[in-house]
Length: 101
Image (cartoon, rainbow, N blue to C red):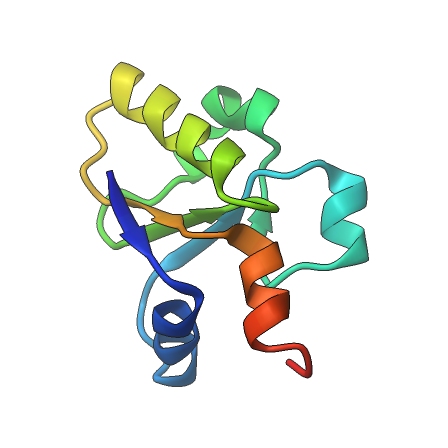
């Protein structure tokens, strides 16, 4: 499984690189704190397959990186995605690294 660190993600954001960012947490978690990702909760991810890009990197995140790994596994098992990337440590790692962001 491909993965990316929060530092690498921040660099992509800062350089305005073209990628899709998806948050697979629950709506209340997304409202409390997010890093601008599109909210598609884990239990709904397969129903939103048409919203997931196939022509650019798709970085998926959650709170600690576990649910995002599950989401990627489920998507790759059922669909021919090769562009999915897990954010290591999720929002917890982001907060720890960039508290003032």
